[in-house]
Length: 120
Image (cartoon, rainbow, N blue to C red; front, side, top):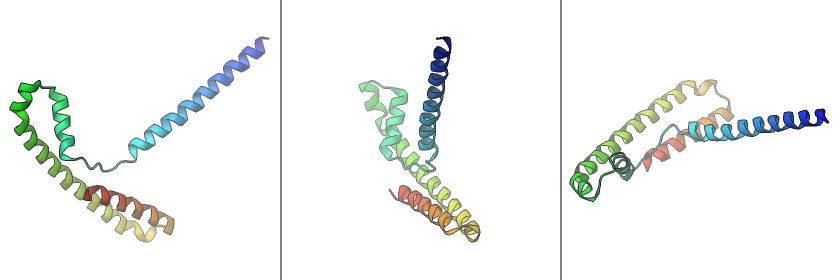
């Protein structure tokens, strides 16, 4: 009878570990797969307003400043994303001769994805 409980406990522990590994792997793969995020002007405005949490009166007072901020942040983000893309493209050009066709295809697919994010 004791063996049965020990076996059930060990099986439950193993199943819990497997579920934890699989779920954390899915979570971290989705997070780390993003090199470039293409936020919009509204993204920065929403972040600033969320941070400040102004009331209606304050919102009216700060709206023009927040709009200027979000415009500047958007332009900086686009510029930085372009620089990142150029660096990754330079890396690809440099290492391309050493890659297999499958690796080239994968790298080019990623470059196209980054370029499409920048173009938004």
